[in-house]
Image (cartoon, rainbow, N blue to C red; front, side, top):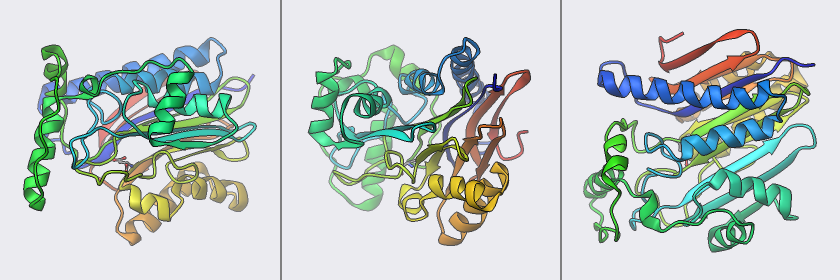
Length: 327
Ligand code: ASP
């Protein structure tokens, strides 16, 4: 039986120790730890890496602290467009969705595309319609709304000199907004992702995001692109990314990390560092990655001041971090 392991991220960006209030710091650490434990519970019980990834990401999608699902950022038109992808490293099966507006859990929609369609990637209305046809919960756009993200949109549009769209109908319930008020503005972005290794020795990766504040209608980042924001192969490992998607796409970050392990024999950490600290930085992109390998190696690497993260493995104490100098 292989050793199980799981790593989670809640986005990378400008996250500095002196910028977060103590209650924000505590809320992020608690959320990342809780999510890692939830994923670990699946793996400990002998569950599949894919199930652990989906279960953990669904929790993050419902938490308005993170830019995925509920609490996602708005497009320039004031809409929510959600992207997600998932991949399993044994049979190289993958599913992805872009531009969802109605599906509560984009990661489950991505998994449904993988499991129940002949396709890998569905976009826009067709993706929501497919999720609906698979019985996945559909919600009104107001479900995703938080005051905090709306304010961030208005501020960003003002900065760019762009028109401010009408406020969407239906505001968030007070409790949701109170939680969202704890969210730190990492710099217009954010994403959630989980990678896992199960006791069968299979790895899986998943990523879910609202994208970037004031993004253009129809803009798709790296998160739902297999090979860019997400990749998994039992020949190397599973990777989930967060950061400036336009850079991650051009470097095919997730697949490149796996290729360096598989073809060049680098350790997972060395491969992640090479792509993030060297290639991404050279290109001018910012962000980070998490990864796990079939032999239990875990890695993270980011060139921003912080990344919300947690890792946990069979027989090892959980590690939760936010800032660069956290362990
Ligand atoms: N990668 C995401 C995107 O470009 C954003 C992020 O991870 O911060 O849509």
